[in-house]
Image (tube, rainbow, N blue to C red; front, side, top):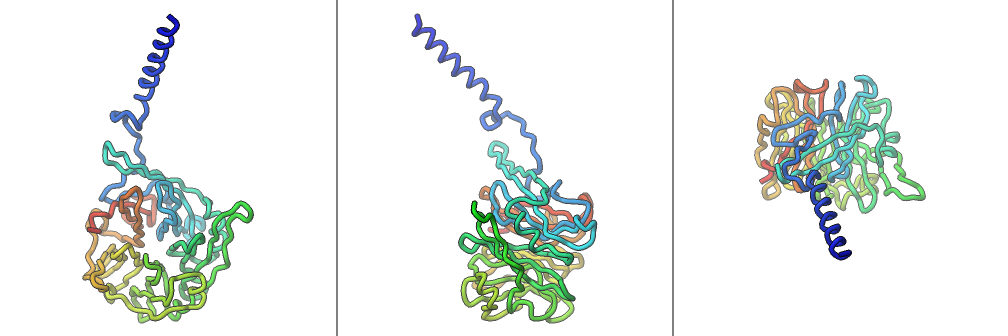
Amino acid sequence: MMKILKTSGGIFAVLLIMFSLQGCPWLNKNYEYDYNIIVTETANNMGDLNSAYDDWNSDLPFPYERSEIWFSSNRNSYGGNFDIVAGKLDFSYHEDHNILDMSTGNEEYVAPASALLPVINSPHDELGPHSFLTGEDMLFLYATDPGEVFEIRFVELTRWNYGTGQTVSDPVAVAGLNESGDNLYPCIDEENRKIYFCSNRDGLTYDIYSAQYNSPISKQSLIDGDIAHITKEAVSSGYDDKCPYIYGDFIVFASNREGSYDLWYSKRYHDEWMEPIKLQPTINSEYNEYRPVLFQVLGIDLMVFSSDRPGGKGGYDLYIVKIGNYLN
C-alpha cells in the first residue's frame, strides 16, 4: 500500500511540474512575448537609449547578448559639447517566431565605462569612439578638438582585477595620424594593421584614408607612429565622405555625394574597393544618416547608425538594422 502511495505521489509531482512548466515562455510555443524593439531589415529607433539631443557615433566594445554601447551625445551639456556616454543593450532570439528582440538601458556609468569616461571626456567635443582588444587590455580611440582642429587620440584600458580595478592611461594623440586638418572617426581593420579614418587634410571636403602600420597595432606603435604609409581610399568621391567602418571585406561609410548624408558600402576584391553602392531606403532616408557600426550578435549581422529623420526623440537618434543581406 505504501509503495502504491509513493508511486502515486511521484506521478502527481511529475504532472504538477509538467503543468507548471507549460506557463514558462521557453517551453510554451503559444506564449505571447512582450517584445521591446524587434530588429528587422528596416531600421528601428533604439528607443530609450536616445535623448532629446544628438546621439550618434557609437561603439560596441563587447558585442554579445548583453552588451555595453558607447556613443557621443550632447545631452549632458543640453545641446552644447559632445561627451562619450554609455548604455546597455540586451538581445534575445526567439526561434519559434524568428524574432530578434532588443531592450535598452541608458546608464551614465556602466563598467568598464565608469573608469573610462571621466578620463576622456572634457569641455571639448569627443566624437567617434572605437575600441579594440590587444591581448587582455583594450585600446580606445576617439577624436577631440582641444584646439582649432580635431585630432585622433587613444587611451589604454587595462583588464579589471580585484586588486586595482581598471586603470586608464592618460589620453595621447596617435603619432603620425594628425599631421594636418581635421582627423576623425578611426576604425581598425580585422588584421590589426590599418587605421581607417576621415580627414579634410587635402582641401575643404572630407576623404577616407587608411594608415598602414609596419607591425600589429599596439599602444607602443600608436605612440611611436610606426606608419608605413597613409593612403586616400578609392571610395572617396570629392564630396564629404566620413565615418568609415571596416567589417571583413566590406567598408560602410557616410557620404553627401547625392545631397544629404546617406550610408554607402563597398566590397574589397583583389585588394581594391569596388564601386560604392548606396544602402536601400529601408536604411537610408531623405534625411541624414551617419556613422555606421557593424557587429554580430547571436550569429546575426547588425548595424547601428544615427539619423535625424522624423519620429525620433530629437536631433540625431541611434537606429539599428539587420545588415546580413548586403554581406553575401
